[in-house]
Length: 194
Image 1: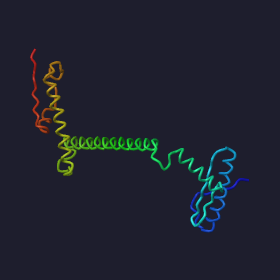
Image 2 (image 1 turned 180 degrees about the vertical axis):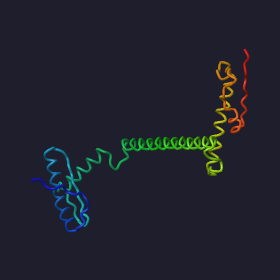
Image 3 (image 1 turned 30 degrees about the horizontal axis):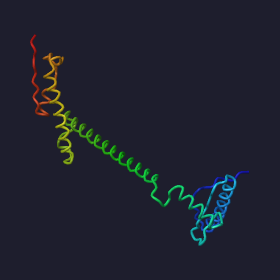
Image 4 (image 1 turned 30 degrees about the vertical axis):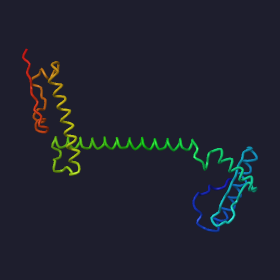
């Protein structure tokens, strides 16, 4: 017959908690001894109780405990500035820095998209400039200036490219009035007569 599952939670009753601590401490020390003997490994357990003056220790020999602890410290560089710890710290710092840079890029891109959407809403009449918060105006101006540069670049390329099908079609709707109204850019239509 199996035991019921133990609920892992703080034991509220002080006397029950003390009894459980005593039993489990000795059980843990016994398991440490078994592991050391069965697997032929160095093992050590030091268990401090909340109100106990003396900890439960295995092995009981202080020299053996010190030998195991010193062996562990020397093997893994505990208490020293080992290269491994520095490498891990450097790697962690690099990871944090890269993550912060990535977060900043994503936040910047998100802000640009918000301003793009705001500019589009204003152009399509879904909102007005009066609805834009004062702290958003600077970013909105930046987005509109960026759009103006892109439009001017496209116009310049369009005028220089005689193979452009829109260039040859005088009836093509280029949205000139909208661009002129929003950006102050006048698009000159050229009609090529063959």
